[in-house]
Every structure is written in C-alpha cells, then in structure tokens.
Image (cartoon, rainbow, N blue to C red; front, side, top):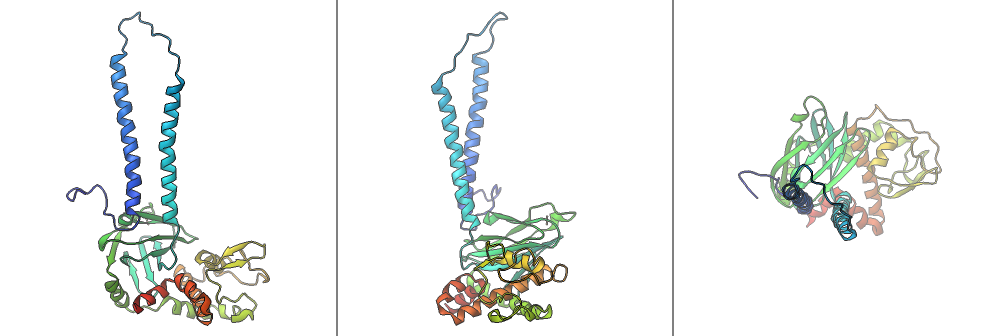
Length: 337
Ligand code: CUA
C-alpha cells in the first residue's frame, strides 16, 4: 500500500486477503460509529443546550420504530462479524490434506525447525510457494507463539501438547517471523526469517546444507533403542498394538471411545501411555516422559507415520489417500512431476 510507511505487512498467503478484508470491515464499522456518535454528541450538545436557568425539558416518550432500528442494525452488523469471522476461522483451522509437514519446536529463546528429510534450521523457516504447508508446533519449556505476519497466521506452542497450523504461500521473498507470547527475558530476541521460495529453489535448498538424518530413520533407531520394537510387533503379534497402517485412522479405546491416531495421540501415548489405551490391550507400556526429548518424539512419530505409508504400498486401494496425508510423499510426488 504505502511503501515508505507500511501500515500492514505484505499479503503473502492464500488467506491474507480474506483476513485483511474482515479487519477492514471491523475498522470501517468502528470508525463509522465512532465518528457518528461524536458528531451527534457535539451537534446535540449545541442544539439542545440549556438556554435559561429555569428551563425544564419536555417529557419525551420513546418511539418503537427508533428503538427497533437501533437494535436491528447493530445486530445485523455484529452477526456479519460473527459469520465472517467463523468462516475464516474454519478456513485457517482445517488443514488441507497433502500439506507439506514441518516441525517447529519453541524453546527459550529460539525456534528449532525440522523438515521431514532431516534438514534443520534455527530461527529460519524456508517454505515453497504455492504449496499447502502444515506446521506441527511444540514447546520445550513455556508457552511461545509462532507468528507469521505476512501469512496472517499465529499459533501458540504450548508445553505438553501439539498444535498445528497451515498456510499456502503466494508470494516469494524474505519476511519476518516472531514469537508473539511473552516468554521470558529474551522474548524480544526470539525473531527470525521466513523465506518463501520457488518450488525448484526450495527443493535444492532442502537437499543442501548439512545433510541431516531423515526424521523417520532417526525415529526408527530411537524406536529400537528405547525397546519399543519388542512389544509393538507387526501384524498384531505383540503384547502391544501393531503400529502398521494405523496412523491417520481411528482407533477404538478400552472406554469404547474412538480417537484419531494423529500426532497429538501418538505423543500422548508415548509420554502418558495410560491416558488412552487401545481396546483389547492391557496397560503394560511404561511412560517415556523424561526419557525422550520433544525432538525424539517428533522422530518417533515420523517413523510411526512411515509405517502407515509402507502399509499403503502393500494395499494399493489406500495408497493415494495415504500419500495425500503425508507431506513427505508429496515432496516425492513433486519431484516426479
Ligand atoms: Cu518465545 Cu516469546
């Protein structure tokens, strides 16, 4: 808008325009009524001022038409805010299938970011333009908030749970990323760089740098180091449920409830195995709280998710849907194109 004096960050994601439009509507309504009310106060104060010490104002009866008008108009205006806001919220809340997954861990005072091929970055986030990107957020200590102003998205990273957020970048360039939750002395230093790249440049960037161990391979090693593989055997042969082909589906619990086997469920079951036990199994599993770091949990989850991908190769009927739900598969697919 005004390049010399930017009031707003650039719009660099698919929802940025929509968020701004709602914001302008809110500002517009607020401005209009603020000005109207102030003008009325000013005009009426002059027009109906007391003219003599003995003046007594006449009795005024209210008019139902006037009452109805000032009930109905604000009602409509606020219901528009509600409906519009809700629609936008759902749009930002529902992650599209097939989004590229990136893990973000907040800690005092930095953002640690890891891509599924193992490439890591600190206080920097590289993403490709035109792709749906899903971030899985965790915190190692206190509440942080991952804020990408040009995408108009912000989400709290809360210790003890996962949060996800998504966006689709529409403009290449370098932008800011922030921590938007006061998290201690160096909160203000918890800033970084967001880089939106062309898909080819992103692929090159992703495969460059210090070659990291792919998340799922690191997870597989951790899985056997922690002894998970002694109980979670394939094909339901073990004392614990098989993890093959389970990720992304519903599981039936002892309580009769059903939950989706997602990142949050996997994480909870690693750290607090008694919370949601699968139907037909006993609560044998010990907690891994304190034995495995947030990063370790992320690696384990990447490995568990990969078990569902190999399953899908054996069963072609679910292959496409499984691929769609896996960020990594999408990268491969893009490479193939
Ligand atoms: Cu992290 Cu503020």
